[in-house]
Length: 111
Image (cartoon, rainbow, N blue to C red; front, side):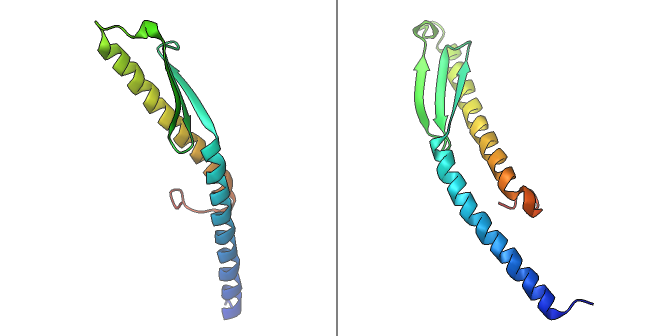
C-alpha cells in the first residue's frame, strides 16, 4: 500500500524532528541552569533558593528558628524546604520539557 520511498521520507522527517528536539533541549537545559526557585518553610524561618541544576544558591535561617532545645524542628524545616525546592525544580523542568515534546506525540518518559 505504501511505497518504500514514502517511508524513507517519513523517517528522514522524524530524524530531523529528533535532532531539532535535541538542540532545543540543550538550549532549554542551559536556560534552566540560570533559573531559580525559592522556597520557604516554617513561615519564612527557612528560605532556600535553588537553581535548575538543583544547586543551592542561598540558604537563610532565621535566628529565631535556631533553638538548641529543639534542633529536630530546624532539621524538619530544612528537610521540608530542600525537598520542596527539588520538587519545584523537577516541576519546572517537566513543564519546559512538555513545551518541547508536546508537538511530537512522543510517549511520556521518552526523554
